[in-house]
Image (cartoon, rainbow, N blue to C red; front, side, top):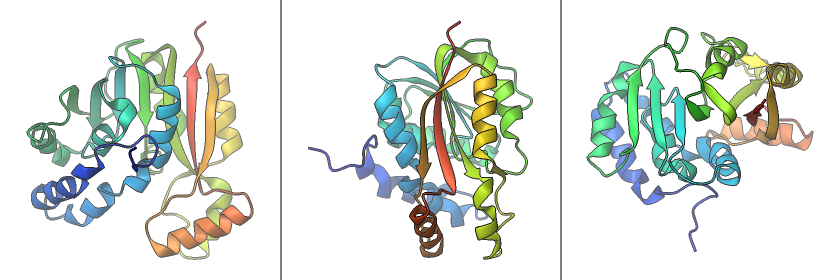
Length: 237
């Protein structure tokens, strides 16, 4: 029986994955190789898709793909037809590098700005917005409103976001403005107004640094979370 965390696979490739990143990222990016290879970032996404995505051959749009960790290590995406989209040109060469290692055979990379790109209507069975909505340059409602017409009726949308209600705690440590934050009630209401039914909504407590893990543990005592992962289904009507 596999000892991999729920929904993750190919973890034996992880050391090689990080080595390829370290050797090929531009100098200004190499400090992030360890971050990109941190599969704790994928735990909620992997587990939720494992529970709710069945079969293969689905059309998937992964927005803000980065250097393809989601495509390689999330098991539910194995066998799907994936468009990986990111505005950062430095990630493009890794598509060929990881293909040469036997991965990403059903994945196509496109460098694009999601707020400018034209998406085909009702083209995707699953849209993934993983680890991007914390960016101050993006707005959750604007991004989802732009992408929602390209999701098929009955299709799934995954997103995660940083909780506005815990911002004051991070501000005490001088990190209050690091991420863009959203109120969970506002996010839930927005999704429901736009014809999205919540399939699963879970707090996420994963972090790599000791200081962040300590804060997450403190919040957990009070049944609070700094981050939430959400899976929602577009109404079929």
